[in-house]
Amino acid sequence: MAEPAHLRVYRFEPGATFEGGLVAAIERMELTGGTKLLDALFVIRDPASGVLAAVDRGAGARDSSFASLLDFRLDPGRRDAITERTLAEHKGGVPRDMIEAVGDAVQAGGAVFAILYAGPPAAVLDEAVQRSGGELAADESVDAATLAEAGPQLTSAVTS
Image 1 (cartoon, rainbow, N blue to C red):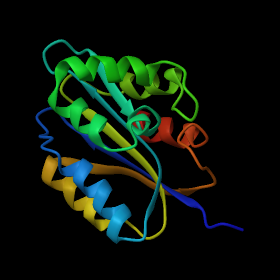
Image 2 (tube, rainbow, N blue to C red):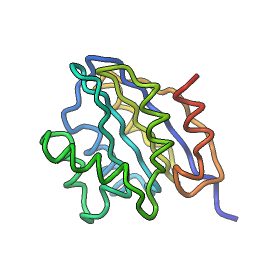
Image 3 (cartoon, rainbow, N blue to C red):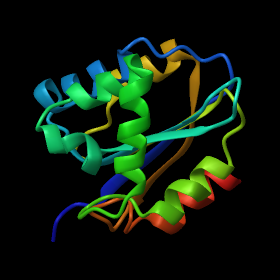
């Protein structure tokens, strides 16, 4: 039997800074830490308008790289397209209703980052989250291969 996956959910209050550290940490944890990324979701609300923006691994992985994750962070025009693609039904993606439930728990200017992985704890990710002004909201073992399968634990983590 395979070891359980780990679900970690991080919360960012308004004013958090995202300068590429999360994306770099994900790459490093996969390349050097023996950790396998199974799924991920980043949801943020624009500080001025409160509009939801989101990217999940399913939408980001279509480019076979982390390029769309960087586009999401740096390019508002691409962010809209990536959010639209993330919210659309696509194979392996986080369901729209789950993304919207997570988004409902995020205040304007805030964000939530959820990651599902197998392997050792990802200290490099925790450090990047801390540098960005985030904090760990949930850490639990789950019997899931995707965030969609860990939906109850994910939504519980962001709504409690």
